Length: 247
Ligand code: BGC
Image (cartoon, rainbow, N blue to C red; front, side, top):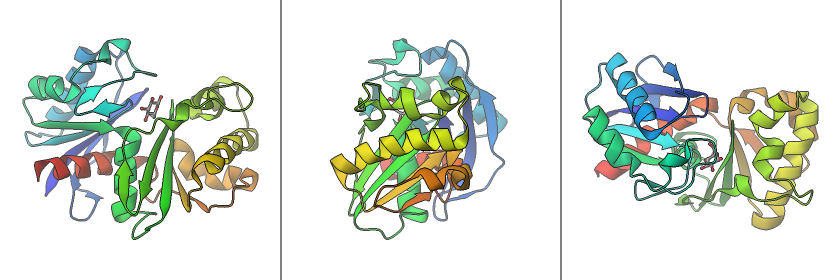
């Protein structure tokens, strides 16, 4: 089945048509800058434009950078605060005229990796960390997702919120070299390991394609591997999530 998968990020909104039986993209990937301010209306119109550019009128799956409970955004760390309490699935369905299914961006990236990627057939505890404007997390055990873990917001033992210390945005803001950033990111992974003891850690987002530049700084016991889909895991997983909701 083909579904339009969309990944809403702090700087770009990206979408492609995904074949959900193979996990392959079957269209080009289109990226539109995230509108500023990223209000619910403006983000919805951008998704409508993405659908138009793909000539798409079918179901849409969206990975969204917030805790999403039954289609409703509960947090808004890197998006407009007006999203809090908004039923994003209803709003975007109305705006696009397509059935829209929305879940947390890291959770859907995790779905893609567990189905087709680096976590395929893994039955232990798997932690997916997506590195972008924020730090997103998805946690699986025996292939089952515990949704909305929001573990990028823990405070580290240096008193700094993890995503302010070790995200891609923090690397940019502090002009860190990859190894310097890698040391920070390892600090975060050590905190995650001490709390969750994952058997496998999968990294998504932009930094996942640069692992060779910081892998030497990683000291946790669990293997740490890049997402097979790199930063396209969100698009593929968004489509998979929509399919799961369609039944
Ligand atoms: C948000 C999460 C999201 C992550 C990655 C965080 O700031 O709170 O919901 O998964 O960024 O986008």
